[in-house]
Image (tube, rainbow, N blue to C red; front, side, top):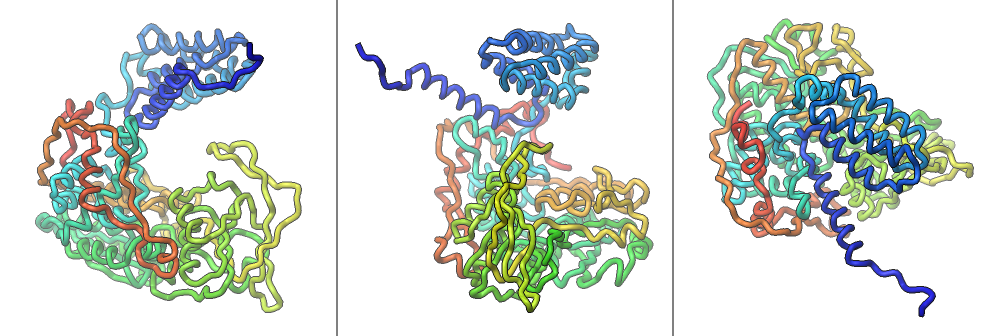
Amino acid sequence: MSRLTIMTETTSQRVIEDLYKDLERRIIASPPGLCPVDMASAFLRLCHAQTCGKCVPCRVGLAQLQKLIDSVLDGTATLETLDLIEKTAENISNSSDCAIGIEAAEMVLKGIRGFRDDYEEHILRGRCTQSLNQPVPCVALCPAGVDIPGYIALIKEGRNEDAVRLIRKDNPFPTVCAYICEHPCEARCRRNMLDDAINIRGLKRYAVENAGYVPAKENAPSTGKKIAIVGGGPGGLSAAFYLQQMGHQTVIYEKRKQLGGMLRYGIPNYRLPRVKLDEEIKVILNTGVEVHTEIDVGKDITMCELDAQYDALYLSIGAQTDKKVGIPGEDGENVISAVTMLRNIGDDIMPDFKNRRVCVIGGGNVAMDVARSAKRLGATMVGIAYRRRKEDMTALPDEIEGALAEGCELLELQAPVRIELDEDHKVSALWVQPQIIGQQDRKGRPAPYKATVEEKRIPCDIVVVAIGQGIESQHFKEEGIPIKYGAIDALDHSGIETMSGIFAGGDCVTGPATVIRAIAAGKVAAANIDEYLGFKHDITSDVDIPAANYADRPKCGRVQLKERDTTQRNSDFDPIELSMSKEEALQECGRCLRCDHYGFGVFKGGRETKW
C-alpha cells in the first residue's frame, strides 16, 4: 500500500478543461445584439455552479438572484423586483466570505445599473430593447460597417477588384486599413468558437495588392452645393470622397504641406508605405476634390469666413499637438515630442540619432512608432519608460513585440520624474521612480504607486515624449464652437447643437482614436451634411456577392502575415510586413463561416446594400 501517489489528470478533468475552453471561445465570439438580461442570467448560473457552498450569501443568495432574474425573463416580475434584485446583490456582495460570491453579485449590480432599461422593457412589454436580429459580428464591430463577409467571398472567387469596390462603399481607404487597421472586426469573429478569428486585415491586404488600380465610381450629377472641410486627414478625406460621390463640391483646407494627417505625419513608412498612401489619396482627389494646402484656419482664414462662403462646413482637424509630461528638465535641448519627430519624418526631414542613446516616455502605439523609428535612425540604445506593466500598455501587442524584437528595451514600472541636463542645457539622463502595481482603477487597469526604493538614473542623449496628443481648439472656441475638455462638443450625428450647418468629427471630437474611427466619422458627417442640404443620396454597391456554399469548414489554423527578418528591417524604413500568397489567402477565405447568410440577419433581409 503506497502512502502517496503522483497526481495525474483524470479523464473527467480533461473533459472539464475542454468544456471550459469551449465556453471561453463562445464568450469570446459572443456577438453584439444579444439580450443582456439573458446573458446576465447565464453568467450567474455559471457563477453559482462554482460556489463552494460554505457561506449562506453565496450558496443561497446567488440561487435567489437567479430566480429573480429568471422572473424578469419569463414575465412574472414587476418593477419592484428590480429594486429587490439590486438590494439582494448588494447584500451578497457585502457579506460573502470570498471573491466567488462577491464578484458574482458585483456582476449583477453592474448589469442592473448599466442596462436597467432592458430589465424594464422585459417587465413592461415582454421584449428586449436590443435589435430582434443578431448582427454579423465582424460588420457590427467595424466602425465603418464594411461588408466583410462579402469581400472575403469575392476574394475567394478571385474577384479582387470587386472586393475593393465593395469595401469603398463604406471605407474609401481600403489600402491604408489593409496595412494599419487595428481590426476590431476580428474580436468577436464566430470562427473563435472553432479555432481562431479570420485574418480579415491580411485578406484585405491581399485584395488591394492584387486588384491593381480601381477607380472610384462616377459621381452623381452636380447639386451646385459647396462644402468646406477643415483638415485633410483620413476623416476629412473620407467626408470629401462621399460628398463628391453624392454630387456636392468639396474644398479641403489643410494646414500641412501634404494631405493625409496622421497617416502621413504620425505613422512611419515601415508600417504604411507613403507610395500606397499617395495612391489612395489620388483616387479620392480624382473625384474632383479641391485642395488648399498650407492654409491655417484661424490665421490665414477664419472659420466664420468659411461658414459664410460655403453651404456647410466640416471640422476634422484631428489631434496633432503634443502633450507635456510635466517634469523638470523638459525644456532642455534634445527633448522632443513624438508629434514633432514623426511630423518631420513625414516631410522626409530625418532627425540625426546616429550613435545616440534615446529614451522614449509613453506606452501607446505612438511611443512604439518613435522607438522603432529611432532604431532605424541609428540609435545605439532605445529605452521605453512606462509607469505601468507591459500588459497594461495601450499599444497593440504586435507593436510592442515588434519593438522588442528590433532591440528596443522596455523599462516597465518606471515613472519618469525629471530629465537631467548638463552645463550646456542638453539631455544627459532620464531619472525614473520604480513603481509597484496596485489596485485596479475605474477603467479596470491596475494602478501603479511609488515603490520605497531610490530613483534610477538612465543615461541618454535624447528624450522623446510620447504621452498623447492634444487638439488646437482655441480659434474655434473664439468663433463660438462649444469646447468640452479641450475637444469640440459635437453630437453623435456630427452636428453642432448651437450652430446650424457646421459639423465636426474624428479626433477633434473624441480625442486621439484609430484611423477606422476617423473614417467612420467622415462617413457619418457626409450622410448628415447631405441630408442637411436637403438631399438623401444613396451610397450603394452594384457588386454581386457570391452565394454561400455548403462546403464543410473543418478546424484549421489561422494564416498569419510574415515579417522581414529583424536584422534586415532595423536599418531601413521599408515595409516590414509581407503579404499572403494566393494559396494562403484562399485557405483563409475558406475558413469564413458566412454569418451574413447563415446568421439571423438573413431572415431580416440580409446585408445592407446602401447607407
